[in-house]
Image 1: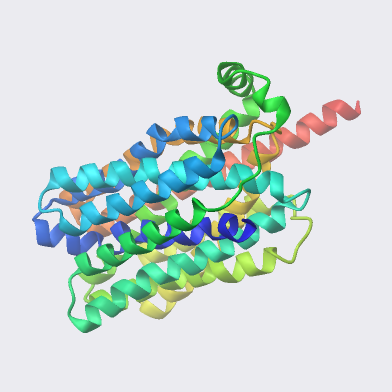
Image 2: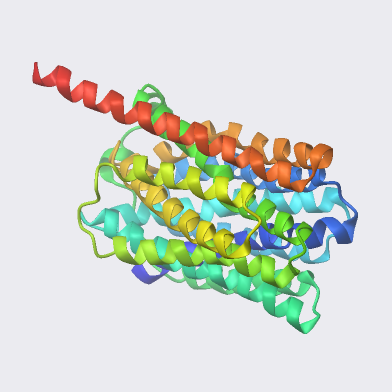
Length: 381
């Protein structure tokens, strides 16, 4: 059972990278504008918000059923991508993918929080390390398909088969039941308590800014490198180096029992430096370094944010995550804005939108850290 919980992000990241990695290929094959392609990416986030009902339900009903059902729906969405021949079909597939991903991952993570038994940061690091391997599988499959002259559709079809197998496996396992104190309260009570906590809103804002600094940024980075003359496979390989950076950091954190308190601040500063270099410097060796630093910084920030989020309200982990991802909804507009900027001024200008987002993430991180220091000082007086 624990193996399935740890592997959930491998399955999710391997499948979730495919729309990102094939961004330019899908856009060109179906004749989409960059704005339309950006809408497809954002539809995944919108679907994820719609799937938050499953996250709340995971505090009260069978996590196994939610996780397995999400995996099967995920497989269906990749299959739709594989045969899609219109913008509407892609939009539907992306929305289903978002809903399915939320259901599958959130149910597994709620169970993992309880199964970790006090060692949550390292358990999350291990889960995300495996997720990073999934991140590599996605680009590797697209690079291999490009080298063999196969369509991106073949990769999506293979992904659908993999998620189908994972869902069938999960359906045979036994997950931890909902906590007694959580099941004793109604879902509405839990939502009310969580939404009244300002800490949840701060985590949500940080997540809102972090969301576009992941797959959407890499999608625009790949497209920018292709427009600078790099081949499709080579451009995808550069983006894959960000995943290598994340893997290295996840592996390191899997051995650290007590994360540093300044992790969020340092990693947000590193994200700003990395995105700025990717936008301003066309020299590929430096872009490679920036991609690696970007991936490592994303890993640090994400695990730090996860561990904090999952410990805010014990027994209401799914409800907290549902609230946070709902707050993150505003982040789906950023890839759309980047697409509109790319249509108007070139894909490189669209990539620069993400540097502005990194500036905002650093600013919020600084203010949040200052607020925590002030709160500790006030309690000491």
